[in-house]
Length: 398
Image: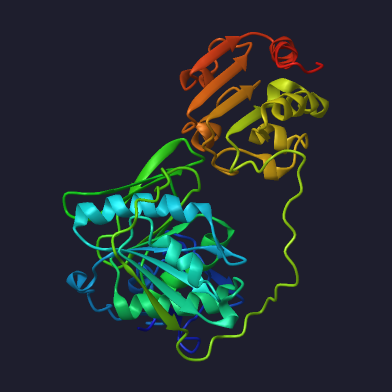
């Protein structure tokens, strides 16, 4: 397939500037007495008829052959692993993938890339999956975008799943775009909702325009329909004894490309409290805390509860907390059993990241703060009075 091209014949162009004035996108400009095309060109062709000297020609790309959608069957989940351990987001994808597969009446498969992961792959069969596809190669032990993308795109091209899901993690975000380009399909990133339409299409929902609206996206003409899904948004699948499926173990086909990066070591983030995404209890602070020192009060409460400390984007942007603690659309999505929001107004960008919590306690002086709209319990009061009282009640020193 050739690309669109707008060509200027330098032997015919006389520098009259008529085309520059005609272009509605400002895509033509003058380089001395020669018209040149810049990156704004949309190949609309409006400029060509305006040229009295036939100096402009538009070359249209050949139309791509239509995809036979009937050839694509099945739902695939990418089984992300780090150091040979399948990550928690995979179980969430299995839960949603099972639901989608049942609505379509097709099998659910989990694709795992790695090395010496036989036990982990057998364990995945205890979840509601029909098949585990294991690609085993020493070069796949640790994630690298180039070899991962080649293996996954090759399998998709050969086996043709109709839906492919991966976590919207650092790994999923970095390589799945490569796969989408290779197999010539679309990719919807950071989905918070997935469903099947009456036309058997994947309805992909994600926040847009800074989280101010929720966009519903369809990929009607290309396959597979690909999505990355935010961690802690979907309900994780539980072990149910499995469906009698099997592990299909494969080797990587052909020579894997050399990665331009090499892993030297893995340093997990160190924190005095538990991991934010996996925490059952989170105490979060926002702009209402007024200063970074106020987060020490939240850390005391989190320790007494055995939880983690989170923050709003406003607190992170102010330099009060590291980005790794940010909850929201541009931070982490969490789903704890208890979320305590201290001095957080409840902007929609923050709500996207925490509104799936089982119980939400909101503490804010403004009784009209949006956070109370999603809270299970609300305290209209001064956070510097309420939180110390909670700490004392739990036996700590405020």
